[in-house]
Length: 434
Ligand SMILES: [Zn+2]
Image (cartoon, rainbow, N blue to C red; front, side, top):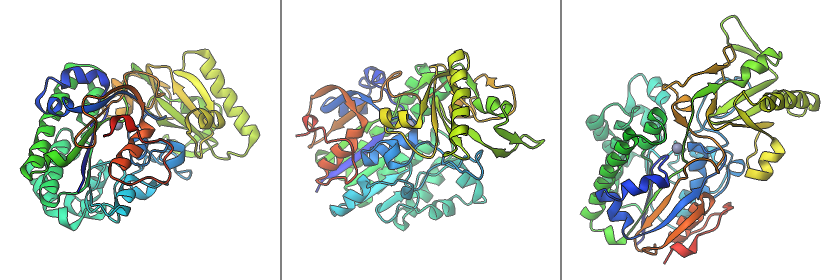
């Protein structure tokens, strides 16, 4: 039987590997690995859209997760994350694994809530507000979001040991504990794990810093725990382990909210408390890019008017916008499409906000990942790039490929499991497989 463990180390980049390979667990994996050094991600380079791609091999427009947050046309300022497996419009690796008769597990992988029909051992990826809304009963929040009965005792023990699950690194320690226990008890064929501490420290301290190095070192300790769990049940030689990442980050120095300018043009109205009462155009942040929604997307006069405003902001060169993509341009160039009409790309040091009241420009804000010292969501060609490392019986040890495409990850993993994906745009990378 095959075993595949996929560890998505959020925002790990190729440049981290020089240090990582001096650490025990990374080096044990990397020394006999196939490596795709720099991987082109999708647009927008955001965690949930990319993790949907990692499961499907499809770009954002195709799998439908175009932002971390779903657009609600009735309440545009609401920020509900895409969290449920059913939000993904495409066939996923988890579905494909089940079709192949394999057992599956996921420990806090994004977009796995209520995915119990194809995830046998599920610790759902929980957001802070789920904890907030469960009246302090964290276990019932997990149950509500689909945690499997078989893993509830493991979740309970993890909470007892690691406490606050809405903070890094305890949320990472919790999920590694759960993953290790699940692997030891149930030996699933496919397991998905998503430690996010490296990403978190990049947001807080900048793209490269001592704090990020420390996060890489902590991640190595977690990988050591995972390797020990696999060895403990005698499956190390039969297990493929993949370390991959979803995006890089870029340093930013300020945030700007185009909604302030749209409101000045009468396209957004607010009450006295600054709450939006109506809108004709609304700019939704995707961190270092943004998506502009129209209340009436088929109104060509409105579309022209908003486009002209956005273009003039872009052409001025001081409003943080380097490109205004029409829906058609984003569709053709990046397979990014949805209910929005325009995509704004930042200037490389500005991220986008959604507030409506002036001032339009603010400094960084460490309480929101979109406005930290570094962020992402930018074009896939910018900044340090994510990476891919595969070690185990399926991978060609020592094979190095300088560049790759993240659309190919899911088809490659599907091939390794002896199955295939119905909706993948990418293709399996045979040169790294045995
Ligand atoms: Zn991420």
